[in-house]
Image (cartoon, one colour):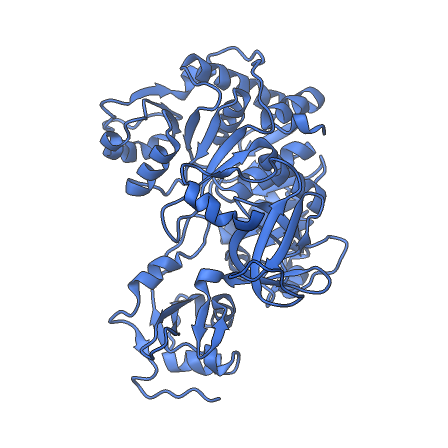
Length: 535
């Protein structure tokens, strides 16, 4: 497609002309929405927003759960050249306040369930003037005093005629906020070309075709679900089925019910699916591919045999798109997150201190830059210092440690700030966690650095463990397991059993909270009880 058409509103209009009656979006078991219907709804909502004074370039808050409304909102906002500010549905209090004020949103599209959070913050949101509520407001629900309330249906009353506003691939189409695990969330300014390349990467590397049915079970305020899966489906002319949330126990039944041919998983989702009790029907489905990020090396081959589906790993961030994919024509390299998507990106491994190139297999920082103008983020909204810090020496610094082998395959090691330095060794918390999670009594594990009592600024390793239901485990038994599966210098000194690990809605463990907690009264210390690690 000509690059001037790399705008979501234009892509939708083209598909509506070419595939008007074909199904495009299905919300659970509801009737599917065709391409033509989605295009008409986008025009109606767009005209409603214009009527309310929304102008090109203006930021519009989108605070909605998975469903059709969040997609109709995105298409409509794009069509008038405004900027969709996607808000994590778990945000409240200071987190929500920061996003809305940082973005400068005057209007928000909001689910009625989240109205109480808006009421609580009203006095701290001076820019916000209008809230469009997408469903019935519960009886007795307190409403904002100053912020005007409008119903979603009022926008839909507009005619479906096409909207004639010039929008280019250079214009910012969306702002998404990072998970905020290490500080205030940063708003990523995402031009339309950047959004398009998320979807085109799926078409190119996963070979999406019109007959594909994408099963989308991840949050649509996240780039993986919205831009990789939904936009990829739109570009390919296929169909996407959306469910409210991921459920490991329902996943296979859903895949079968909706005749899905492709889906994505993130974080621990693949592991949770694998841990479901095996059934004779595990491989009875139409699924041909799973883009699993990461693909757990220790279960990958068994997962593929059991479920009869290819696992494909990739690597990316909201800021840098998806510059790495495992090639479909090559066998999986367990542990690798892929090769460079060379059509549009450059990737190298650099010394994190000097930014100098490192040789093959040397551990350094993964840095990325685009080949296509506007195929990357434009910066962090209202945070120029963070933009400059990330973009030094004309490469975007991901903050991720990794290595690239002689064949060009990249292997993720850890977040650099999560790397633990102990006894002169740089330890990957990711690798420690893999060993911990292999114990049959362990459901989840997180390894963090805590301050060592040995001078020199080194760290000790603390393991935070969630046990499987009904399981018990002594710390000594866990460390016995570790000693047989990891170097002596990586065996945790501290162990704490917790009910759950703090996570973002995209299932990333919030290690900053674990590090802040540090050593607690419930932390077990191997040295205090005389446990010895063999060398």
